[in-house]
Length: 304
Image (cartoon, rainbow, N blue to C red):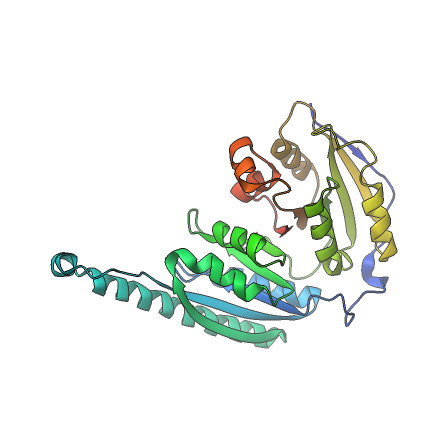
């Protein structure tokens, strides 16, 4: 049975926080990864990203990666089905998608006053995630919009999480707020990845009207009642007053506990550490990250 124990203290609105616009803690340099193949990132997802960056303060750059399909010379395949020409056509289609999306991004970002730059680059199909991770290393945040199932965007996000050293914001079109951040929830298990996510998300948390720190207790031996107190103390040191929620996760998976909480709690963004244990172990045994990536109910701010 899943129950929620909430700290009833009223959080203080963060508009008066000392780390507001112009501070060194702002996310000034954001990267938006734009998918080009097989379907381009939707205009709505691009608009959402621009609106969110305007909300949190900073500039956003668009990165579109055209996909190359390396083909080993094969005269028979070329003669029968034109394999080399097919690969060239798919690359051309990907680049056309990228140029169109970047043009749309430029127009929206310039109108919003948050335009950084545009990058149209190429990478082999199976190396797109690695390429995006490389570009994300010198950005404050990488935004990765989800499209259709199996479009590879989750793998791009995972690549950035593991290989860039920077946080990722994963979202579906229509789910990101462009006007206000009412409630941001921080999932806290006291682990290293959760600590990194908490630190990286501070500029966003400072702009939220309400911040809640969530701990799923009894899910593992270290997840005990009161665990979130130190996280809340750290947030107060940065001028952010956070309420504490404890979910009793006994007899439920961590994913089920998070789903139950989000079903009851309005949430504009969930901040969480990604892959607190190895990815292979999560794939086999299940885990919070793997569950949330499979079907994110809200936009996810992830750090490892």
